[in-house]
Amino acid sequence: MKAALSTVITVLNEKFGTDFTEEDRLFFEQIKEKASYDDEVIQTALANPKDKFKLGIRKKIEGLMIQRLGENDKIVERYVEDRDFQDAAFDGLAEEIYASVKESGCRNP
Image 1: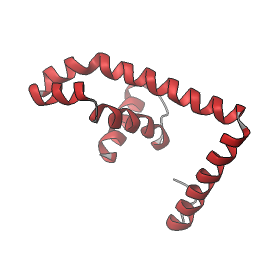
Image 2: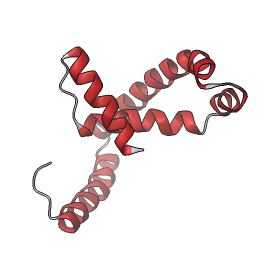
Image 3: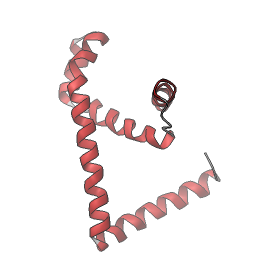
Image 4: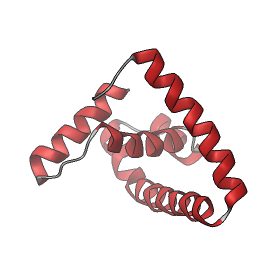
């Protein structure tokens, strides 16, 4: 649900004076994806109404955010320290970026 997560970004920016962008939405997308496939989250959603579900997953979401931060750090650290990893990641990423720009013809968001 890209639109819903975009709304989260808008609300955070308006309420807290942040300047999160659509790129930052991807962080929330990663959390949503991890949570959506987590057995504990699934069981909590299936067994509860939304208000109880929210109470039941607060700590889980916090944990997923911390985990995601650590995973991102590991990727960046490996990219900087391992030339073979960097070359492989760069090649794939450059291919994807090139294809995306060519497909959309987009220059600016």
